[in-house]
Image 1 (cartoon, one colour):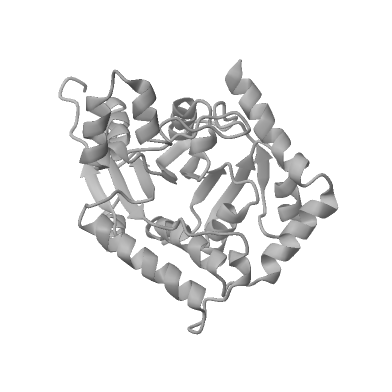
Image 2: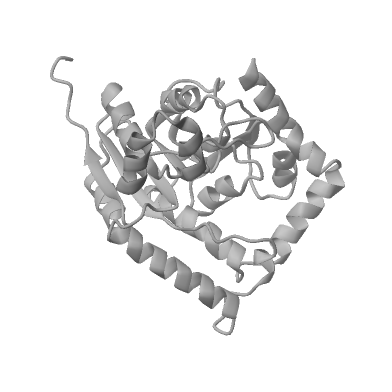
Length: 300
């Protein structure tokens, strides 16, 4: 099966690039040595800040999916909540455990989680969903083990948000070769064998409606300015490179706000139960758009 081959290649990737335990340990040493005042850390915080409205209640349980290095779980732990970090391969996570970055980890395939139903308050899948060969299988599993909700942070599919691209898609639907030239990343694949799956608001609305779930929340962010060496460049006021990245992000944010272009990344929270008023207010304050899903009138 192709999906099994893809998962096996993902599992092997870590050992191909970091063949020994010392190589993996060195990675953590370099990651922590650069500190927090650099561009790479600043960009990661753009992702993590999306979680803040759900982290204000302490001692909640979280499951992180595809958390290769444990940094997602680390952010959750630092907020005063509990987290189990999981990935296909736990070589890095075991080192993170030894170094105190996380306090629990497990090997998990997102398509067949070993966790029980409703066993975690929240499940987080950050920048991993697009790697899954069968993302919907993984999504149903994440919803199954979550009590309150599932958070997915992924690149956004531009076609539903760009009328011109949608028009071209409709016009040249019969000429696939020409359409693929116009829309170069329509079908993109990674060397490890998976199709790069981009998400959209509409697909998650439909998913929630089909499962009779009460709410979906969306936040649009533009954090895709990473480059090799970003962890070595300071975010102080004298950094020209950081200044230009902030300017590019500022302009991109304005274009997204006026709906001229889609955001680079979409953060989605699929709620299994309606959140309380405090959480709703925090979500709105954090820049989320809330979509209330009407109840199915034909189900009790």
